[in-house]
Length: 167
Ligand SMILES: [Zn+2]
Image (cartoon, rainbow, N blue to C red; front, side):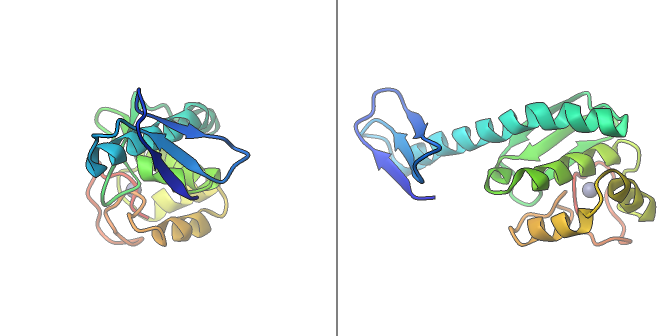
């Protein structure tokens, strides 16, 4: 989607109209490129949070698992993470670039870690049971760079407990 920065803006904000294939970021003229980017990144995190506000409770109901809480951050190497000890989940703001089904996959993946910290056969069976076709979604996310929980571990390889979602 084309991105346009407009200066001067009074209050920094992102203007997005679903009808027009363009995202406009209004920022004060004096703002550096890094500051401008931060406005955009905050907006992306907000969009992802909006989707998660419905996706997380939906999948909690379907899986019977409950996270103690979740946050959205800009992560470099993983799409999500789970801390089985505290039950909290983290999701990558960069998921904004993917369709809802990919987000669903990350949610299910991280929830599954609440009961199975490793990416073992049991883990993959749980995920596939809740979300058939999960391998396809995992592949799709892989093409986008960070790995689902980022460990980059392939099925069967040892994984670090508490890591989010590595495929
Ligand atoms: Zn994982």
